[in-house]
Image (tube, rainbow, N blue to C red; front, side, top):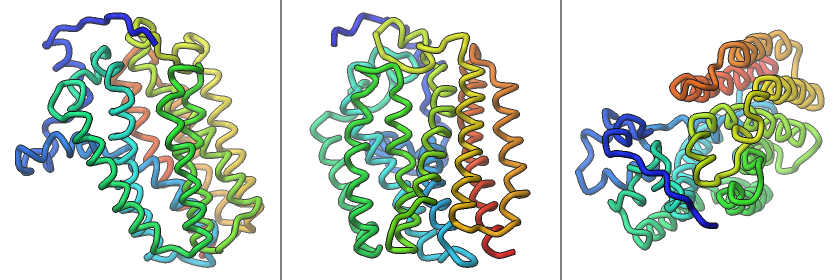
Length: 312
């Protein structure tokens, strides 16, 4: 694809960059490590939380009582490792685009801090660590985890071809709903499938909000996204995506025979998404980023609802 120029001054890049230089880990880490930590988005862990939450949902929904602490811990570390690996892969693929977008121009690869070759080696190291974590699960869950590599590999390319790359992100980011259930039960059924669909609609919502940060640059350089496609019609579509999220979570809980306490516990996360729909300012990049980050809290509230449903 031919990428048109979208020039920005260094001052604009510093003002708009999504890198959080004040992060404690970055401040104390050796200088030579910092570009690699930035590749992992260590300064912005919300993406790892969003990858983790469906894993915890599936684990909690499949559990009889409290979820096993072993699975909670394995998925915690696995999500942070694999989200980091995914970010490295995405940055390798998108390096030319990132150099043209003011928010991403200072990332390690487009800014020249890390070469493509070194980034690729680093990506493989992260994948090996992720594999070691995956091998702690049962054999069925291991194969479910291996199958997740297909949507993970496809997603970074979709913004070049379709106006809904958020759908492919949803397919990749919510695989944990299947994996969490498989880790506990050693099989798959209707309930985790419904939960997976819920997660996809959730991602369509929060990542469309996120994409509104870059809509002006995306239009210039030819990146496709739902933010660009929907434009002023975004709010009602977000409402549809979030309503379907809640519906399919409730259906998943019903299919899994989760206890009665799950349903009143879902009121709070429903109100949280409703508040996002009403208050998000699609023309304010900082507000879009803030609403996007708050989806971690929504995910945790849903996790607590499943836990309550299985212990009360």
